[in-house]
Structures are given as structure tokens and as C-alpha cells.
Image (cartoon, rainbow, N blue to C red; front, side, top):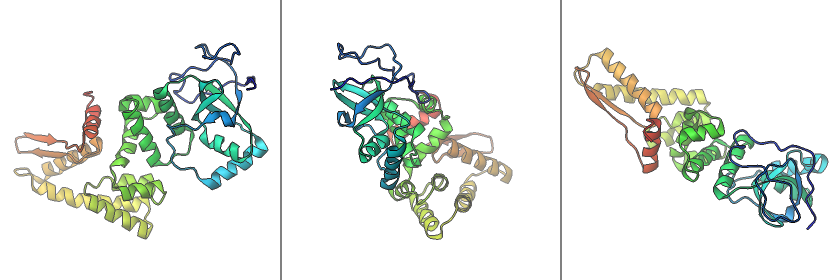
Length: 305
């Protein structure tokens, strides 16, 4: 195998990735193991020596867009190198840049510029997910699944996840809530039949049948986000009025206040919250959860774990 010779370009790390992995050193003919000190350089690696990333968060690559990228590569070459890790001598595995890798094969290239980094499986998964979230045009559902994998497989808390991807906890939680939608609505979001704005409005309805009914109406009538939000608000308002009627011993003003607090709690926890109070300001708050993961999510919001 021909030696990979570095150019004078400097590697560019995505936000927050420097803390995950160290740059690889220049390849030394007498060494099979990459030492820890950093290197400045980009290597030309044969496409035949590179395996695809088993941790790739993107599940679908648009063939037309891939073809356009291949044509661009034929003319302009690879502008942004891919990132790989070394498995054995002459054997590499993609960390990020699968679209560029696949398009380069389509363009008939034999080699591709790459950064070589050292990483174990968990670091590779974390880096691949974060770099894809930051750099690729993932849809909202793919981002939500990527966040979930970072939380579960990389053992991150929501606060740590937010720091890794540069998002606050509320934004992360908004994406995670999408995974609670029924499969039909998730498929519509994945296929761009509805937007994340539509989905975020629909998820504020607790009843799945009502969620599906509004989803079908949204698609059939091509409703914009604002109209869907109005439908959801009207539906929830009638539900809140019925709930407020069950609160005994409270004057109308107090009933309204309790209803608003209950609504705010439900929005904060991403779950249907029950708030009961009597005329002496005594009562209880109930926060239901659907699974162990859902309980852990609520506990994290409460900053208990």
C-alpha cells in the first residue's frame, strides 16, 4: 500500500468534537499504532480501504442529491475531507462524511482526502451522531433519534447532550417529544409530509385518536402550522374547561389560575399533568410516565438524577 502523504491543510473540528477525540499523528512506516500526540495533515486514502460507518444516524440518502454531489466532485473535487478511524493497516472505518464517500465512488474516484482519528466504539458513535446533527441536513425525526441514541447508548444526560450539540434542554426536549407521536405521524414527519411545527402542535394533544384525526385533516386540507395550532388550542381549551368544572370549592378566577398552571406544567414536562386544589390551597400534582425512559426524562427535568 502506498504511503498516505499529508497536505499542509489543517483539520477542522465540528463544535464540541475536540473534547471527544484527539487528532491522529502522521503515519509512520515503522508504527502500526497511532500515538496520542496531534498531527497537522490530511491523508489521501483509497476508497477500497474504507468501510462504511455502522453507527451512521442517517437512514436515507436522496439519490438525486447524491448524483448532484458526484457531478460537483468531478468538477471541484472534495472540498471537505471525510473523517475515518484506523482499524488495521490499510483498513479504515468512516466516522463522518458518508455522502461524500458514496458520491466519490459514483464520481469514479480512487482516493479521497481524510482526517484519521483514534476512537473506540462509543466515541465513534458519539462523534458520528454529533457531527451529523451539526453538519448534515437531517430531518427532525432523524435528529430526535440521534438525540435518543446519545442519551441511551452514550449514557448522556439531557443537560450533557445539550452541551455536546450546542442546544438548550428545551430544544432537546422538543425533539425528543416527537418520538412519542404514533407511527403514522412519525412517518409523515420523516417523509416531509408535515413539518416539525405541525408535529409540535399535534403532540400537545394527549389522545392518540385525536392526534391522528388532526394529522389526517392537516394533510387532506394542507393546513399550515398556525391553523393546526389553532385547532389544537380549541380542542385543549374545551378539555381544560371540562377539567376545571371538576375542581370543587373554587371560585371562577381560581379555577382559571389552576387551569393555566396545569397547562404550563404539562408543557414543561411534556406530559399530561393533573393538578388538584381545594379552597384552602391544598392539593396535589400528578405527573404520569409511560416507561422507565420517560420517568428518567422527567427526573432529569426535575434535576433529581
